[in-house]
Length: 233
Image 1 (cartoon, rainbow, N blue to C red):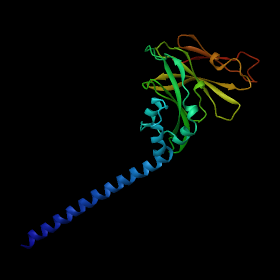
Image 2 (image 1 turned 90 degrees about the vertical axis):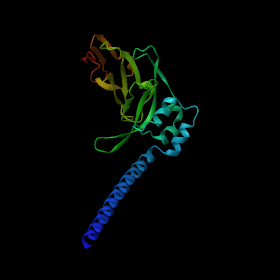
Image 3 (image 1 turned 30 degrees about the vertical axis):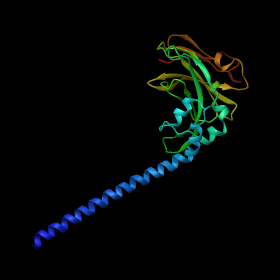
Image 4 (image 1 turned 180 degrees about the vertical axis):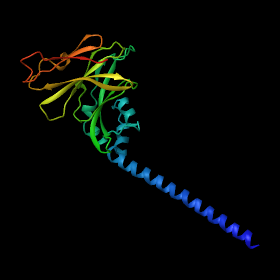
């Protein structure tokens, strides 16, 4: 009689211990979710997000980005600068599908590899199949992105990107190319704002297949040929 009773007690203790472990794990998981949501909600405020989603004038691509859980949009910045973020620029048909492609800017929070964060911006396309162009500064304008040419004849137009640190006299001009669903920098030169001519759109040109040149004009380079030739593939 005593032996079955001991077995019953052991079984009850094991069941109690198992239930306690499950309960603790559930609490840990719930706590982690609460902490993550609180951290994200600080930047992508739920009340502001709801206000933006109900804005009938806001472009549908920005609303789609707000609903994209992989993107953290700085909702306060977006609300404070709705006129800026409502601007749209046409780039023409850059992916050769017969449809015009345009861009607009969203303010975005980026998480670095060291788990720190920085306020940045992204250029998103009206065609959501085209990946966004991410920039780690807030002073990105639609005018900073422009079409160049299909340099490698893959059917996708390479783009020029004017990069500004927001404060310095010296900016940079980049040629970016879409490879494996990511925009990659293929060439870069200094852009000195003291030398505004020729325009940025005239400083990158295709020479031949897989070759292009970029023009760099600074006080140091103005006395010699400022062109730099690149091979991207």
